[in-house]
Image 1 (cartoon, helix red, strand yellow):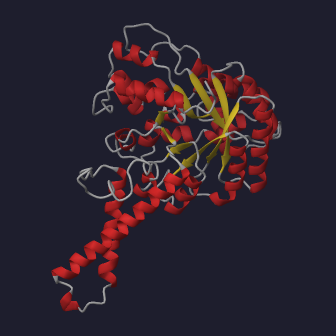
Image 2 (cartoon, rainbow, N blue to C red; image 1 turned 45 degrees about the vertical axis):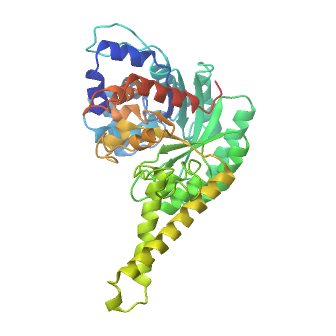
Image 3 (cartoon, helix red, strand yellow; image 1 turned 180 degrees about the horizontal axis):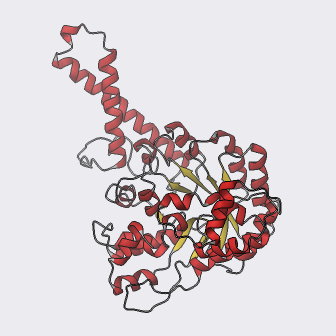
Length: 434
């Protein structure tokens, strides 16, 4: 294990390690194909033999490298594996072996990491919701893919469940098939608990997915969506996804202040805490105060820009006083409308699926200090710590929790009580009832 999570884990003492191992933890954002242990992929490559499918030169070359036991060092090396992973798990037998290995790595006891005195084998988590996009291959259709994974999941009753991922690049026909399968398999008593929207964050039109996700929700499935993963994702798209009221949000790295304020609009009363008052002093970190300030600046600029006063009058104090009052009224009205809208709909606080190593290594956040988890913790908003893809990010759930507990700068420097509270939030955010 390397990278920031490995460094954080190695910085801990035995007592802190034992504390983290003993915490009941839920893994709620783990992709099957990105979490297959490297040794399992090498075993599959050795067993692969002469594939019946036509493979590209690159994929065949990667499989040959896996067969030779080559060592991966750079994150880019791991991402080049994915086309080969799809080829290696194209049969029910291989997919079952891969699924079994992933579940074993999360749910069965693993040896204590190197460098610690204590010898206390422990499972990475108490519960996992494993997610995967069903693929049709030359050897199985999508339903066979899902039933293969579910057979392995059902070997951990009450401890594992399946989230079916829908890729943003899919056709509507394929999306409909995936949702139909999710509902069918759930109704048959299988531990299918949710639907995920995933894939290239800059591909597809999320509007096409809305009615299908609504149908899934009406059927009792939990909803989670990868949202605002990049700076290029638009505010309009994030607003559209939030309008579905998903139960959990994946990453949510670049949600704007306005979107974040949606989660806190149930806190203040209109026209009291919105702007500075005797009842609640101005708090620059309060989500609605941030929204008020941004709205105020925007309206002030607009009012001054649209003013019909002659140029020589624009420096007069009276104009700026009037503009200030107008901007404040407009900002208060804007935030009041948001508060009233949320009051009508009820409280909405979707749990944020936080993947620290993933964000750091993919450089969507510059540092732990700048990570958006701090915002949500400061505002008492539910989060769950997850691994995303253990293979490319070379991490474990234990190591991700080490990033919370380790002292700065290698970790966030949280207290044990704070880390325990985060673990409890994750357990409460499960789609499967305890």
